Image (tube, rainbow, N blue to C red; front, side):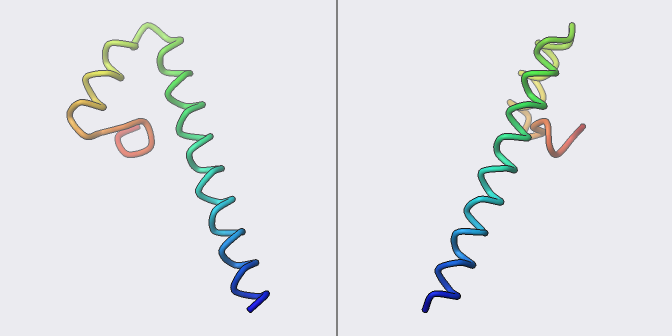
Length: 52
């Protein structure tokens, strides 16, 4: 049971790290002159982690 818990915690941490990286990348794109491009890409379904 403890092993399953540890795996779930590790999986959750990995998801949080992935979200943090996506947020960091989105902020970098917004800091560039392409802020409008980022918004249009996200609206089209191509967020920072998919279409970059």
